[in-house]
Amino acid sequence: MPFWKTEMTDIKSLTIEELKNEIKALSLPSFRADQIYKWLHKEGVTSFDEMTDLSKALRTQLSEKFDISKCLIEEKYVSIIDGTVKYLYKLNDGEYIESVIMKYKYGYTICVSTQVGCKMGCKFCASTLAGFKRNLLSGEIESQLHSAQRDLGIRISHIVLMGIGEPLDNYDNVIRFIRTVNNENALNISMRDITLSTCGLVDKIYDLMKEELPITLTISLHAPNDEIRNRTMPINKKFGVDEIIKACKDYYSKTSRRVSFEYTLIKDVNDTEQCALELAKKLKGFNCHINLIPVNDVEERGNVRSSEKAINNFCEILKSKGINATIRRTLGKDINASCGQLRRKKQGSEIF
Ligand code: SAH
Image 1 (tube, rainbow, N blue to C red):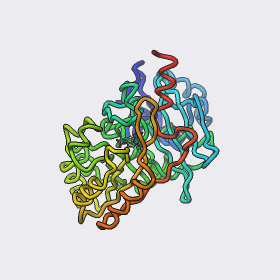
Image 2 (cartoon, rainbow, N blue to C red; image 1 turned 90 degrees about the horizontal axis):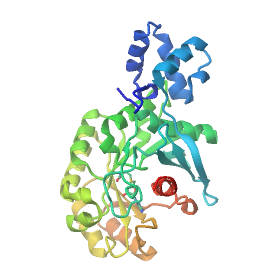
Image 3 (cartoon, rainbow, N blue to C red; image 1 turned 120 degrees about the vertical axis):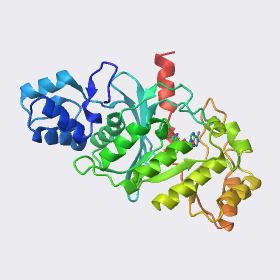
Image 4 (cartoon, protein in one colour; image 1 turned 30 degrees about the horizontal axis):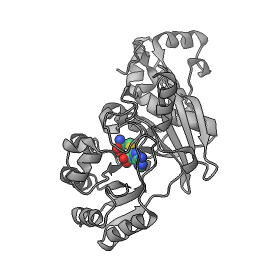
C-alpha cells in the first residue's frame, strides 16, 4: 500500500481495484470508487473538496483517511525560443522535483521525474548531485501531468520517463503509473506513446519484458565499451555494455518493440571515430535506433560539448554502417531544460 511518512494512504496511488476495496471497507457503494477515480485521474483534482458530486460528510470522511499526492508549481520557466516549459514542483512532504513539457508536431510531450534525486551517479548528470531522497509514488509521477495540463490548458499525449531518477530503480511505482495513465478512466494515454529511459538495470529490463507493456524502451548507453562507460556511469560496473545490448536484443525478440539508445556526446570522452566504429560493430544487424545528444552544460560537471563537426561525423559513420541514427534537436536551451538543475539550486538555497 502506498504510504506517506504520515502513514496516510495516498489515494491517488491506488489502482481502481484497490480503491474499490477501500470504498467497500467504508461500507460505501462501489460506484463511489468510480466517481473518485475519475476525479483523481481524469480531472487531476488536488483536494476532496473539488469532488462536487460527493456529500460534504463523505469528503470529510475521505480526507481524514487518505492523502492526495500532488505537485504544486513552485517555479515555472518558459523558453522564448521554442515554448518549452519547465516546472519545479513541490511535493506534499516539501521535496522538489522537475518536469519539462515540449511541443512537437504530434502534440505535447512531458518528461517526468520518477524519484527525488538519483542513486546512479552518472558523471555528466545534474540529478545525482543533490543525492537520493526517496522514490516517487505513482500518484506523484502522474500529478506532474495533471499540474502541467491544468496550468497550460493543454492535453499531454506523450510521456518520456527521463526526468530526475532512474525509473527501473522505482520499478513497482513506475509500472503502476504506466498502467494508470493508460486507463481509459484516467488520462487514457496510449502505451505506445510512453518511453521509459534507463541507465541499464539489466535484471529489471528482464522483469519489464514480462509485463508485456507495448511501451518504448530506451537505454542511456553513452559509450561503446566498458572502459569508457565505467568512467562515466558507475552502474556499468554491475551491468556491462555487452550484457545490456544482449538484454535489448531479448527485449526486442520478446516484445517486437524497437529499442533505442541514447548517446550523449562529450568532447574527447566518447565522440571519436573509433567510438562510432566500435558502437556500429556492436549494434550491427540489430534493428534499433540511436539518438545522438550534444551534452548539456551542467555547471558543476564541466562537461564539454562535442563540436558540431564531430557530432555530424559520428552520425554519418553510424549511418554508413547501416545503423539508424539521428541527432536530437535541443529544446529549451534558454531555460536549462535538462532535469536536475532546478532541484539542485532550490536545495542549495534552502537546505544546505
Ligand atoms: N535514469 C534514466 C532516466 C533519466 S536521465 C536514464 O539514465 O536513462 C535522462 C537522459 O538524460 C539520460 O539519457 C541521461 O544519460 C541524459 N543526461 C543526463 N545528463 C545529461 C547532460 N548533462 N547532457 C545530456 N544528457 C544528459
